[in-house]
Image 1: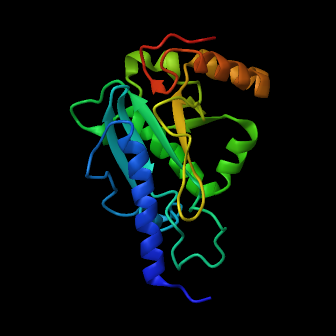
Image 2 (image 1 turned 180 degrees about the horizontal axis):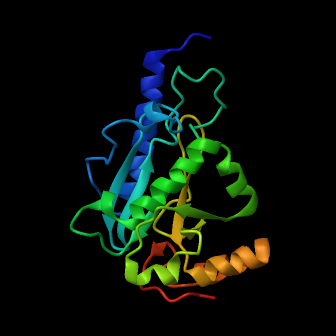
Length: 230
């Protein structure tokens, strides 16, 4: 079947509109996206479904949201045999109570979101793992935690821990798009004690940390001032 560019553009716009409506329900969506000057795909990085790689900023009562924008775009004609879904079928977002004067792209939260977005683009099937397991944990390099707080968050390998998949209002768990459902997956910064508990106890440890974080007043928000739940 030949690639229908007009239909592709229609599906892209409908997908953009569906995602934007979900974010608008959470707060004020910045009309400008954060995007690299040179697409990382041209420098050996993973390719996003429609090549477009961007991040949105949303300001709401919970704080500042940073969200990937493009992982769930419809696949373009560079993909020989794309799966029948909305791109990689998910976007990742994090929430912090404030951002520095340097702007979103200088914040540790951006490194957290962008680092996991890179994993999604490299592996493609993470949404299925998340659906199967409920939550996922990961470790990420190069997250610029302030020096004074690194002992609380950064392990001996220079990585921070994060939990993927906590779910709470006002963020929709899924968005309906022409290519199928899109999971909006929260990423939450873990303290070092929480990460160590997951590493030591595996799935049971992750499930316990998930239950305890889910029971807090603001499960979706990441904070350097938060007390550990373990």
